[in-house]
Image 1 (tube, rainbow, N blue to C red):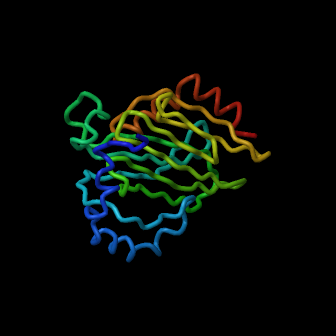
Image 2: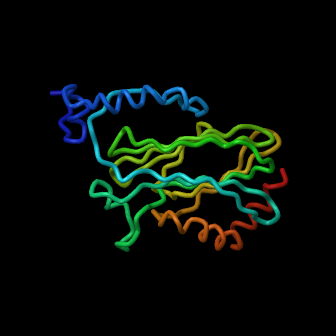
Image 3: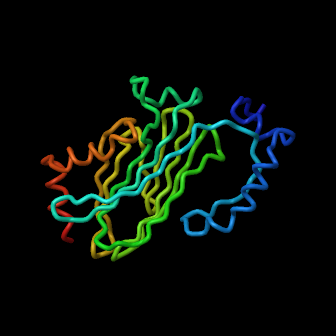
Amino acid sequence: NNRIDSLNYTGVLDHSLWDYQLLNDDLENISINTKFPIKKGVFPVPSYESNGVATELFEVMIAGHRFVAVKFGLGRGDYNKHLFPNETNVRIVAVFTLLVKSDEELLNPFLGFSRNHPDYLAEGSFKTASQNIDWLVIQPQNNQGAAIVNMKYFDLSNGRFVMIIPQKDNSFRFMQVPTRFMEFEQIGAFIEKEKKSEEWMKFIQMYAGN
């Protein structure tokens, strides 16, 4: 028997459970999702209840260099409460944060996506002076997760925070910080603290000028 038995996929396999109102809504909005690394397709899915996704783009100065960060988070629900810190007042958990050195103020589109509920995805692009950086994050319902940045694979069990510094020769230097799930609103404070650390300062001084 090669068939998979899984409650999570019952609605996906059973066509009678597909929500055609959701499908029609997605069809009406398909034209606005054209600037991302992977084009957002329209697939029928069963009806679901989600506590939402959170995405935010912000800038930070570190050692005189401009960095742009994007963070992707999930709202707390019964389907994902095991991902959250023990504090019961945490409403949104940060799944992944990407911090990129970018000296120019350019458009950096990003998108959080819930249609694979209870698994979630996000994607986006950074435009830097030397090259583009495309990224994709996959957070399944379990604790595992992965990010892909310009075809570099990051196992998020090794850390949910990645810093990337593009080089003039079109290569990259990266640091994966060994962080767990954190409260979404605490990411900024985490960066402000860590950017003064010896490890971060050494990494940035070594590669930010190249």
